[in-house]
Length: 241
Ligand code: MN3
Image 1 (cartoon, rainbow, N blue to C red):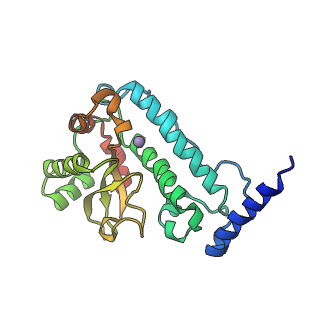
Image 2: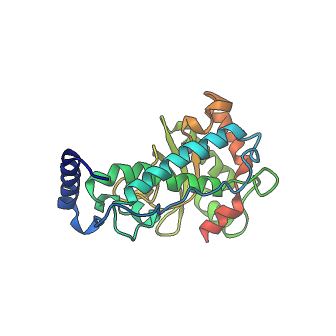
Image 3: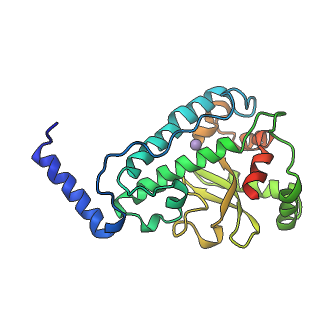
């Protein structure tokens, strides 16, 4: 299909700008198959009730996460083939400048939600309770006790102004810390979040209103306290080790 001269000029200008900023990172061709796939939920949409209602899960996964995935793929199509999302999030300031905001928002959105689904499980079927083994020991070492950790994490989630996430991270030197990021930022984003908050995300809680408003309206605190009943500590332990 022919493209107009105006469109051709626009495309050339866009690619020209990006190429000036980071020539080696730009793909030769913009057309490639999608690189990341929206993961299926690891349980039924109603499986986390009553902590998280089915309708919220359907919209959150089928609309929000799907949207981040689609927009991330559009950005990845403009990068060369080595585009593991996790590796990209660690080096966003090195990406072509025209793609940085998209990679930050949608790469973060893709990664954060995938982790969110994976680290929850139905209450009584892997969800809730307390961590065991090495993870439990590390939590006690870093925070004094599990309940002290829980309180710190809940507070980080409750006091995140506007939209964002609360995190339990494993720091580069091995210690654990609780942090919080705005929007879809996450602890992998070196150069974008403070150095002290860089680490491997072990557990994340989405406190965007889209994550709870249908069921909880403005009661973010109730959402947070019920969410502990669906945390999949076995999955968190697997990420830790
Ligand atoms: Mn969300």
